[in-house]
Length: 618
Image (cartoon, rainbow, N blue to C red; front, top):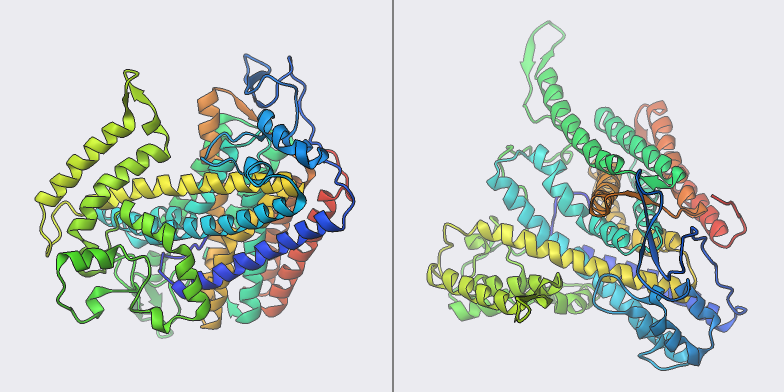
């Protein structure tokens, strides 16, 4: 995801929408060709570890005391869901329903049954189901991005301000987490849904996005606007990223991740934060006194670090608001007389009516397309924005959010489906508590002034947005797994294409736009710092949770595609680490072309490995 400070940009969202449509179209064309012209598919079987007993789906865990512990999730024969492709059309629905490997572990909708059962039988019907699924996938991806940019990231901004964090500390912690949330939660969902230790979807997404951003995005920036890179931050980010990639590669090679190793990824990012904060502090102190030619001394501004800010922009105080340049700022508009009901109706409107006439056609389509999920987000996730009038306080809406946010959270986490004492449902308790909180907020606040406890809504918004992101990420992962079954594509390829490209399209669009506007340094910093954050926490958090939960080491099922991913990520970083310093830190067009060509070679090798032209056993 976008690694810069969060900023609302409907035009960029519209361009991302077009990019996702094009990406979906490519895969649909492949599906049409496969169904129409290709010979009958031969299912590609993935090797499984031998285990005692015949089980249908196993999560493999090993510990020092127990060599092989298998958690049985079924009691039929060991059958892959991909074998559905070998069945006749009228047999596929029954096969999917009866095969435990086809069932979902997390999420709400079973998309495999949607393709093979809900639309009847026949290739034409399945094609219609796939088109609907691709549109639904785009809708969920847009919802994921909107939740992170418009709801999750602003909450983290307010939280960091209430904790009195400087821009530098907040930028590499809270805001980095806000911008990387879709990638990290997607990795958590993918690893949580991994079957038989096959974490290829998560690994493919994390490494695939890293290769894409460090080659295509970074290369495009250098081609569009060659510039002089700042030495210290560039070397810091690339070296840390290269170390993280090499560590990940060693874990993939031995096909096992221990609890201490998973925690080590998180600690490594903590070390990176320390280096960034103290490195900047030392750099500023060192540069505060600059000797002149005649021996005199001049004092520089404390915040002088052109890599950390936009060239030509005014440096701001460490305590300035983290989010500025907001669209729809009420403080920049002439106040109009409106009553409370009108303000409430305007607040829950998912489409910006005032900017609608000036929007481009594709932006209008994007606004309409995302309106349903935007409406649901508005009525469930409170937003505190200090750049808005009354910090975006709305008495009726915020009171409603106390009720809807709590009820949604209980149902989305499935906690609300449990019962207390075997009779009283938890969702009913959430209704009662939510109604009480809603009434408390309504009767202790005013329409024209935000209450003193208004910043607490940022914490509520953070929690509800987290649940939204995780829920949507689970659905995206389930859809991609269904795509893998129907298209007979491995999880690693799906991760490095649909999941990685979907998460990185925003980076490509935003960074190239910034480069055209003459601000390439901001984009290039995001090309290395953002993927580094996603890789360390995208591996560290889910595997730490998994190993602690199961009390054992996590055994990985690794294919040659994952090794190719890790190898090319390290190759792209080594290429940048060699070429840029040798070029005296000049990001030239030649450097950009080399990176783009490198990504092309990577795709060719990955496709050859997927089609078994390059057949290497790992």
